Length: 411
Image 1 (cartoon, rainbow, N blue to C red):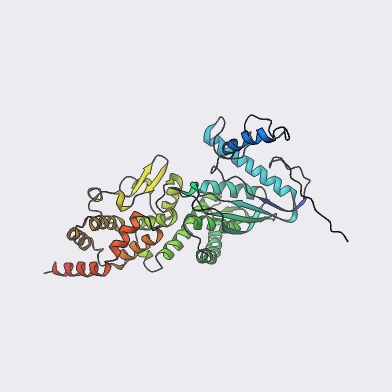
Image 2 (spheres, rainbow, N blue to C red; image 1 turned 90 degrees about the horizontal axis):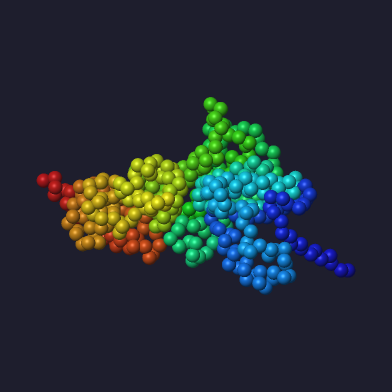
């Protein structure tokens, strides 16, 4: 008795106009472009010219143009009139249209699996709004480690290592959710989810993005969310709240619990930045939102200390990037730590002990635990980590000497 052989069919068509009838598929799997991450068509030109030479006569329709066609590419970078803003608007419009087509060809009980990753909140707002407006409601999500750390894209950048896989269904959404109640739902749901992600070894920027992916399952079931004054809560505001919940959890975990409440907003920001982005520079808007989640006004702090703006990017300076005379007499934990490390490196031990004594940080456990936590977030080759580890190797002796110095100053 012979077996029935299914022959797969491969077709080329636009994602915004699928050539299939309504409710045709049990499942749809897609990996859409990640906002403005990759200039796909321009990269494809390199291969296109050689493929055209070898296969152009066999598939003339696929190689009719001089280079890859770019007019209908769904990406958020500018390749036509209108600049970047027009490119973003086009991306959002076309992504929604593509998801609407997926919802149309999906059976009532079918599933759509969407793969996505992007480190900016604006990229996630676009995906979330497009999915929900198309009638696809995420019911589960998983972060899956998909990217190589050694790839060029990951060097000197805050590129993500994980992609988020969403399982979406055509569900009837509830009309209205109340913001105060939805926040509690999100917080309760994330408590278990964040612990699971942490235990799985998801860290840094991937941890935040994985949490966003998880929380969509909660607020995506409502058509709209309002506060008690009747104001509609935007996706951006919901993502800000999620980031706040994740920030509090992450800081406690990085510090192994205990002293998180003792740290100033700037110290929390520094610690969280190193854990999230290491020593990479980050786009200003993403830096602003991370700062906001810790209670820091990044625009006010920029240029005054360790936060430096480089065109549209932000970099957080380590001790090796700063000068003693620029740190002055700040009592902020991170400034004192940076000045201490510079004095330690230069071998000016007397000034170092004086600084630790006068600032009051020299005998505080929170000072050394924060230094240890920062070290644990950095790679072995980091210059800042080497300074921290060298300083911390003499921690007990330093505390003893600072304590003795303080007691002598009483008499």
